[in-house]
Length: 344
Figure 1 (cartoon, helix red, strand yellow):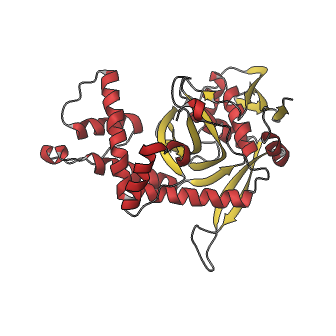
Figure 2 (cartoon, helix red, strand yellow; figure 1 turned 45 degrees about the horizontal axis):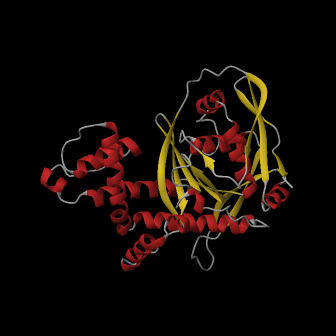
Figure 3 (cartoon, helix red, strand yellow; figure 1 turned 180 degrees about the horizontal axis):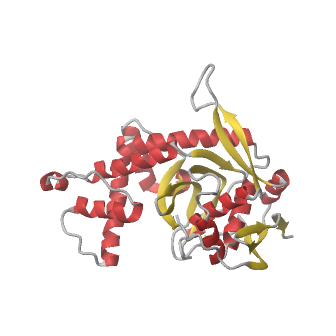
């Protein structure tokens, strides 16, 4: 869908943390169930082959062999994932794209299953995005050097109000509904999820839903989209920056992300804001999806902003902008309380 086709995300007037936690847990379970379904690998393989072909054309890398060989190289480059490809050349050439893609999707389902479940209120989403916009290069280096110490090193975060981002005004807008991140040997990998309702539309969407139903599956609310990697920085702290500078965010506008680094910055900013208690967390114990009877409840971490209820109410109206200011001293980031203003 093009940028012009997107509207401001729907924000609940009275966001309820228990319901939000329950929905986040259910959406997470449905998403991982989909990733492990055989039809998911088959449907996603064509997209990944297309990405791999464009990558080879753009880089001029003369990867030899059949399409599965190219796809294996693409998975290693784009997702840092090594597929278990057949050693026999004949077997490798015989439609191995689907099982190779299924391996990657199953691994990502495992990543989500081992992650802490977080859900951010609409106000917390706005504050974290304003903070991500405020981060300087030195701030990113400072936080990236502290990755092992920051809270929630492995998490699946549901955004209760999705963000809209695009690399440029000429490219399609993505409605990001969730992030999953986990530590790597060299930093942090971040996967993003998009809302199925906006991503799967028109005749193509109908065909996709029909194909899923044919194999006894249904599409989840969130679909795995892309991945990015944030490199850890050296322990050498960046120079102090005592002058406050600010970042702003409004749900009324689409974020232009030409460097495609917004989502790593968002994950980094959110973890940093939780570490400084600029955003607060509390645990909700939620009944597992589709469970009955006396069952053990599952913990879901709810992320809130200060004055969360009033802030969320303000976000309902048009023209509400969230602002937060930062400075850096002695290798630490210091944040002011977030403010919001509604234009009249």
